Image (cartoon, rainbow over all chains, first blue to last red; front, side, top):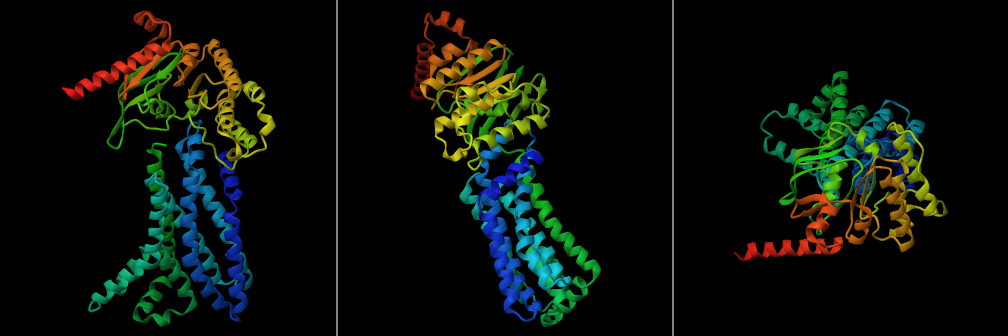
Length: 255
Length: 247
């Protein structure tokens, strides 16, 4: 596994995308912290990067990389290696390089300017989001052999969780506004990794007061230690389940 | 040594292998012949575990290949179109394969004969994507033979090679054959197969039409050239098909 991982990492670093991504995140971090006098506001700006750019780059890069490594996977599959070794070397290679890019690009500046609990949560949720979207990209890529289709599915997943999902939930709440929906909002947040990451950071920023009664319920749940653990577990499930499904599919796939 | 038992395989609606039952024994040199799309490459990929059968099992030395991947350490495979990771340098590709084989428990002496004969060291600093098709084939051939495998699977080995390289490779194949290795070859160049193989597996319409010794086949047809026999067989096959269509 280690031997194969070495060459996967080499291959990823060779195409300079990940280095560019690191530099972009670094630039954005320093820009946000530099413009804002209050580093707390910098964190809010970075949160948007965390919720939009990081998932998008993770899912698209992972999907394209999977299709571009198809020859590599084919070559490895004729060697004395199990499908598990082949799959997880590829997965770990992508996860490691994107996580490293994130830690350097966002983790280091946050630690430097805002080394508080909020900053820590921002970095932790950003990392978990990276893993979750890489897992979903792998799942999408093993489902179809058509590169354009696979990347299309990956984009739709990102679009759904980033934009469509909130719209759907809002519509649902508006049409059911006569009923008490506060508890349901918690369930709905657990079903979207991006929302989870958003809430986990916002709740620490004391802006939840702006969210009305739902905000109070959120504060109650996500503010408690139990709530934090439940949502962190949910975020972990968001990357474990898709990668497991992807692996199962890959084990029975014709290369 | 290798046994295909009751294999069925289809890609979607397209049936690629049906009712495949065949056994290859060590020391044989087998030509897999058939028209395009008759399932030759699928058969080979199945033996390597790259394509999984819908029904039936493939056995290597009596053990089903679905249970362990270790058997692949005893196979040298040269793919039809040499698709290699484009960003790797030739030297890295070679050392990666060595790493993988060694960590899978391979020991022994490396066979660098083809690496020397093809002068691969002279371009080992180039990345795979910059090499021409024929040069990539050379790298593929050198890798297939490098770990002294018991079984050699060569899918269209001479396609794309220049005449000099072709002769080097053919000599190498003959050498390995004399050492008693199992050889499985596909090719459309029948004169090559005539030289290099002693058994023929003829495939058509996703089925094995026959598997027998070339010597016996030649006596049956009273013809000395394998190419003529195969051409006759393919023609006869398409005729009988068109008859079915008419009736």
